[in-house]
Image (cartoon, rainbow, N blue to C red; front, side):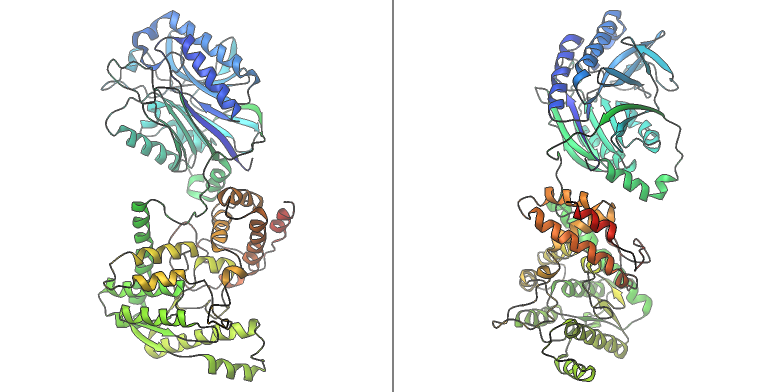
Length: 640
């Protein structure tokens, strides 16, 4: 459903060369996986016999028992709607091959021989097995004629984008793994049946290898390695299992378990397919001709999602990673602004400071740019322009922040100029409509632009990515600047960056308490008068919706091109217990209405740096006609 394929990596408890025992454990895990609606179940390399059989692989009795074991596994799958991948030694002619086979509903779909046979250090596989390179055609296995080859791609007939290929253990360690060719040929998921012994820190390298390969190939990757029960004569096997998706580890099993272990996760094949379609470099690669093996699997009605959906996709997680990412993002902003200041030979950076989050981040970036260039912070001119909606809280925070940072300060109230403008255009100042609001925004922009001319300066824009997506800006007002330093930063990330700076010391002055109060202030353009207690009366998120929802919508609509229905489904999972379905649907409809109708503002954006995977610059990532119609997207939501 919605492109999710439920995948599992199983590590059964086993006994070396005891095929009957091993098959019994495998069948028990197939039953468990089937009950959990698993679509693709992957077992370790040579799991029917065990990987550490050594010279016993050359015994006819073991080979016969392994084939009988495969037959029993195939029989078990007859009434199961799960594709199972298992490993066993397969005799072809007078040669033995280390194979992994896919089984579905009693049928052996195909066999994939291992290509790279390790024969170094503790490995002696060439003593028993030949490389499967160049092997193709059909063989008879368990009485069934099946395809064999290293170019097999298995495709579900009734599930769009459910295509997978197989590589075996060492194949992944090769210079050019078979999965590179398989994914270029259309496989969206790779199953790796493995037997990787444990060494100090090897699990970290293995995890990195699987993660990086899934990222490079834009694929899902299921890795299952041998565990408890393998011989410990000279090596120990930890039973490492990993499920990755395009570089992200979705699930990882426990090492050194004494019992059978299984991990399950839903891989988003639509996400992978959409990302490949978008990545033209990927499409330009040579694509070898695969052999497609189709099987009649259809969508299951699953009641849950076996993966975590991050409600805050733009926010870095983990203390060390978050700090590193925040520093990197902020440095992109600072470097972009510093370069523009150098190039234009401007004498100053002019910024309107409101006491809100966006202008705060822009000011911090400007101050840091001056430090970076080794020039006086007085290069920055902060302008506070109190208007009809300005509260004491935001005004005081704006002034305190500018003083503490040591920049130049100008205060230019706009009420008198706005009232004169109302008189000139014949507008009643008691009518608090769009004209009332936009007059103030444009008056502020005019002041900043004229001051910049007077100062030989550069007006630094403060609007963020979320506001650009929603069109929450006055056209030719705060929408316009000479460099939009926040244009690539979504609102949820603006908060995180300001919070990170509040806890840092690199600015050389104590702005922590000011920044934390700014973080606690409701988001508002302050274009309408405050209430009787001088509290903000115009709260953005009550008008356009919660920014955490909109940033979630932006991420999946722009980054991956998902349908409104799928985004709604993901949001239900991500914000479970935070927002109900009606609330999510209300703001999702509003998002699509605003995103389409406000494109004209994005079509003439000032320059500004891209900091993450999404940008709405008309010169860069987002090309969209200003007169596009949103009917298709809104109609889809009407069906919910």
